[in-house]
Length: 310
Image (tube, rainbow, N blue to C red; front, side):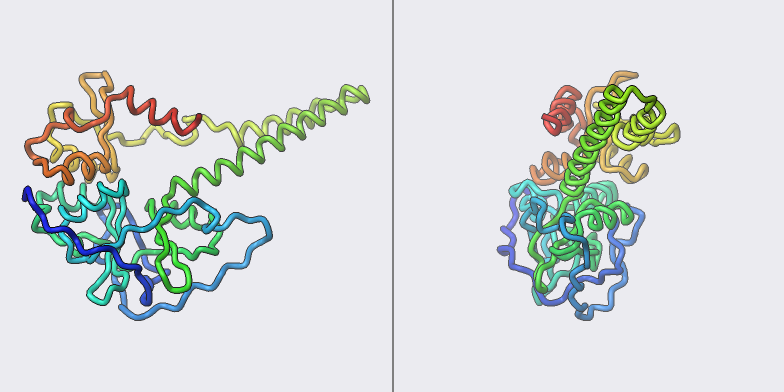
């Protein structure tokens, strides 16, 4: 890697040509980095019809999109992303029109794992062209469905022909969880009301009460066993493995993180965001830098997870 790099041109507000709404954007490294696109101007998506009170994308906490020219090198782009603390960037062509998207996982699995030189590789070589997008008036739950079905974590948000922001799947998930929690509280209130009626009238409402409790348990209190199956694949590396090996594991298992272990003891976790923030943007060698030097210890991981629930 080069120790010096020219600063990338300032980001410009992206407008006019929009990516195809039917195009496929995936963080899966096995997907084509240059999906087909006709290059023509796509019509603005019509505002979806929805019921009053439904949450729309514009009501979520959106992040301002980082936009840079597609000819920017991976190294320069990584420095810009690290400075903004973002894990995805939008790319523009020579006319300043939106042409693609690159994430931290793309950098890990399409550049580092492939042994490419970050200071010589242009973002246009690894970007996913014509990414899927949503409008500011799209339903938040629909945006979440797009990301889940497409297996990606980021969506550009378009308003009046302009890319206004970047939507992260976490924001959609937090919104969905908040709505589920509210529904769970309402379910508890219904169960309490049934119990109150049973006490006052002396009737036998055990069956309805049990039904409501069972329904509430299944809907709002899932266990890990419901989302982690026996055949779930986990990528594991040793603390002494170089970052290059870790990114190859990410590519092999199609994941954006690996578990760092010594024997049967978990030592920490190393993610594609760590590759971006702690390795590439810091001009460290993926072949010479050990995972233990740039991974988060397990105690830090638990604290980070706990911070989301307090």
